[in-house]
Length: 117
Image 1: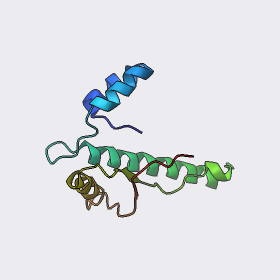
Image 2: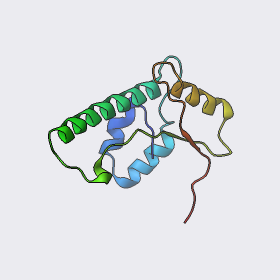
Image 3: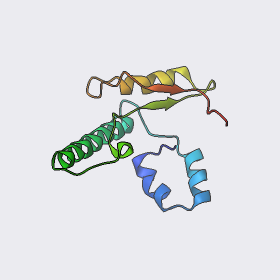
Image 4: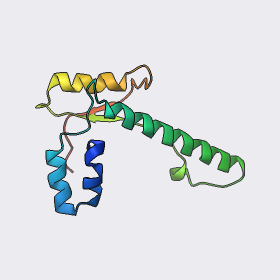
């Protein structure tokens, strides 16, 4: 999992494994403020691409192409990762981006700690 501003995405994609770890620590995540709401744009783009791919798969199935059950696209699932040290106001702002009337995402998981197996 990672989040990066679009302006730093090229640096991240071109970086080596160790460089990527450093960039993830230092990038500040995906901007979501009122003047630069990239999080909204990322989510909207994901929804658009997923919808188009799901429609294409539906057309393929109607044309007789057989998919294994695991290959059939399901509804998107969203998660927000925020541990006990996360700033409540920042988490609330991220939730408000999800609940924007244009995105209308009211069902998501809130991950507070990664389980260790």
